[in-house]
Image (tube, rainbow, N blue to C red; front, side, top):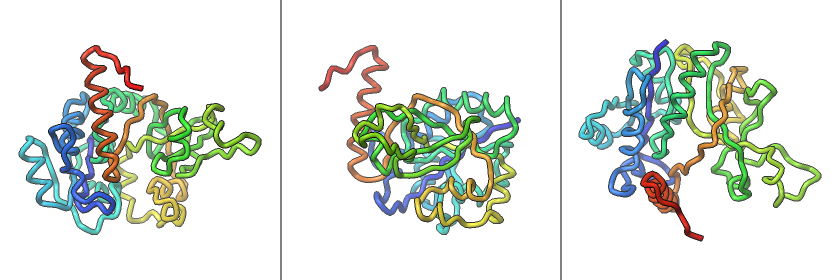
Length: 259
């Protein structure tokens, strides 16, 4: 069983153009992702996928591998699917290039979990939502699961809806979970991607994982406590810098006393 890791890195982002090469504490956002991925044990290869020559040149300057893909790819999964036959792994991770705080231990746990089970098409992490600000933030995707921890639905809205509870107390009930945007796909699933019907739910929520759910594929979840900011809009760079500096302080053995 072999595992590849792909980092889709679209340069022409709509909300924050060029964000993949935007500076984050002295390095481009994408370089942070690539460096973390390159240190993960158990991967056969780590490949950045982009439509932009400027990104390819940057990645190769760091010593990474980068493949150019079509401008027409509308999602990271589609970008991977467009070159799926070039990957050597039986399973392929999708780690977005705008999530610079990749948890290497989480990837390791996902590899271990995949080796232990076979009845899934996609494996993806979820985390407990304990803050109201995350629960009501549409950029934090929520998920509900069945008793086997298989995803039933993903939404930008808070789900489940707690009818008999005030909304400002929903997070206290500890019933909500958020989604970490990392996927482990079976390679043969992505080979079939062009045959999978387009999903009105995926279009409505702008969530590509709903395309697989609506087509009847199994999305198995794995629990994690790790949640870190992705970079979608300009303000996210400031939040990411604060998060990065806080993590560096913790790593050095310090503590954060900021109010």
